[in-house]
Image 1 (cartoon, rainbow, N blue to C red):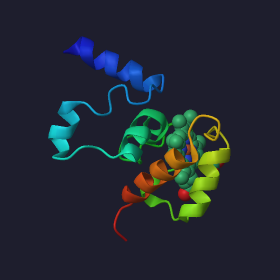
Image 2 (cartoon, helix red, strand yellow; image 1 turned 90 degrees about the vertical axis):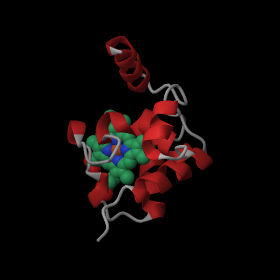
Image 3 (cartoon, helix red, strand yellow; image 1 turned 45 degrees about the vertical axis):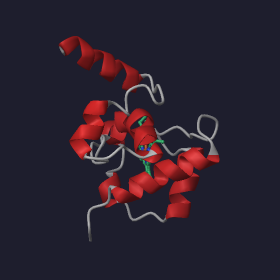
Image 4 (tube, rainbow, N blue to C red; image 1 turned 60 degrees about the vertical axis):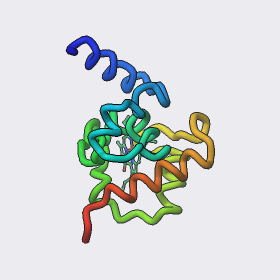
Length: 110
Ligand code: HEC
């Protein structure tokens, strides 16, 4: 079990899209299959932002408190900001929209 866990952490660390995000364990825990945006977020973004968006590693902003508009977020994810790299060469336009839509679902209700 400890072995599996470290494999999972490594896969996330190296940003291997689709490697483990869709595991049956995760589906069971949530009672539904994760969306494409959630899988991308968990593999690409959770490293700094955490799966819930509030980890704040390396100066990352708490995404649950973000007031950024969808369009602004898409631009930031494309181009990066500060310590965060841009994703436009790594993800398609559609994937960036999916991941941003997932980020918006992480917000705490006002
Ligand atoms: C290497 C760590 C790192 C990774 C990986 C990362 N971010 Fe960030 N993120 C940051 C940092 C640092 C900031 C703060 C940038 C600043 O304002 O200087 C930030 C800011 C943001 C913001 C702005 C929030 C606000 O209201 O100001 C959004 C949205 C965001 N990240 C989304 C994402 C998404 C989506 C991904 C994955 C595709 C991602 N981040 C991956 C470090 C990271």
